[in-house]
Length: 287
Ligand code: ATP
Ligand code: MG
Image (cartoon, rainbow, N blue to C red):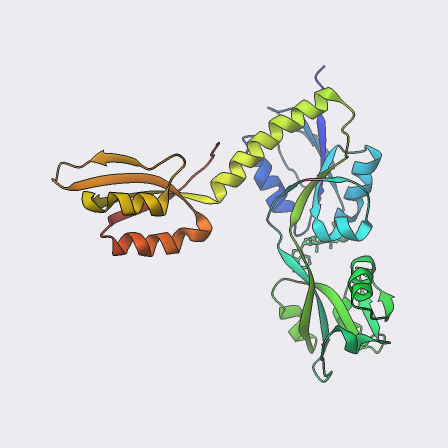
């Protein structure tokens, strides 16, 4: 029987949906019935283990799972020696210092001797040490935002994505000490050739999906005289595809454009007389 690569993903929470979505987009089929704790894909040798995100690094270290998807914050906090296989880019958040609205914040040094509540003592300790600040930690595993109001802390260090929860609790974010995204982790040595080759196949697909998400397919009409200038702007995978239009002096150009430069490129194309600019998502893309 063919071996299975076992992947640990968060059962329910901020990482779950996107973790499964990225694998689904690889054409891998599975039920993802939220009640099961373990299931196999029907068309790829992969098995899912649905667990609490805190447990994922230990499971991977101990071989209970072969790989896992977890927030970089959790991975760094636990400081377990594993390999980061890929930064998956989603679940963006930051670890920030927040203080009560009436606290005059002048920088990390003003936390000297204060009580800071956090679920990330390891990461925080590292940052404070670098800045030669000593503070005492109040370690809590949730609802960090209420600790100043109940008098057990002077400041907090917690994950933030929008800051709305902080504001609701009379706190303001004053400094970001760390940023995080979801990462795929694995052991430094998989220790099994068959599993290693499954992982390689999986990563080929994941990379294609991630690359596709970062690019758009763009088609537009252009006065031929501006073709050289446009080629310098858009590039494409090798170079743009150019086809002649029936109308004399006009060409149709097809190319891929990176998402983060898209609006820049769009404006430049407009300035060079591009018309009928059509933009479509790309589902998969290899090099
Ligand atoms: P579990 O029950 O699995 O232990 P949890 O409550 O510890 O779940 P979640 O709140 O679901 O965890 O967050 C999981 C991860 O999602 C975090 O470790 C972090 O990497 C990421 N994340 C993204 N945005 C936020 C946010 N605004 N607040 C907290 N975590 C966030
Ligand atoms: Mg957790």
